[in-house]
Amino acid sequence: MPEQAKTKISLYQKMCGLLIWISRLLSIPLEMLLHVNVGDRYFGFSGFLSLVVMIVWVASTNDSGLLALLMVAYIIRIIIYQFKRGGERDRSSPLRHSRYAGRPLIGFWFNNVEEEKLKTSEAVLTMLLGGAISLVNHPLGNFLLCSGSAMLAAAGVAAAITRDKLLDKLDAEFERQAETAALQKYISGQPERGFTPVYVNAQVLSSNSTPPPLGLIE
Image (cartoon, rainbow, N blue to C red):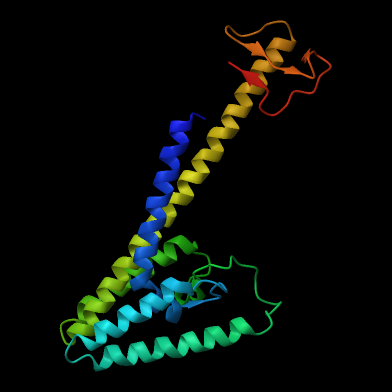
């Protein structure tokens, strides 16, 4: 792959990672409360910053009693999370990435639904609930609206990254198949135009050689 293409992909991934990190500042509080089997390192520094953001939000708004209760619930959840994190891992629980955001609780009612769709639905429901609550309690409703939007953005970016990785793997597989087919034609005496064989140990590949996975130079 050309060096320029590698740089573009790297920049794209960094920008996606930055967007997810910023979104987490508002999404982590609800995700910690609404998700199960959260990874051991999911909370991290961004989780601490999300708590700071929530404290500032509560302190800077009037009539923020309900939002303060949500913040207290979040703090209790953090304490429980840290306590479990420091204990011995439950071997009966499924293996997960250390930064795994957990599975939404609504997954208990929709076991056959993909997790990506569950997280998207969860974000939309949070936004709808926030819009309804904002009619009677602006601080809590606005926080839920912003948090749901952040959850939706993070889920969308994560899905795009996963899709791009899958497409890259498919491209690599198609390229490997094309190279293998060209090599087989060369071995059978019908080389494609512009095909140049690869030398291994100073010897050209023959019909008795085992072709490497990526053994062509076009």
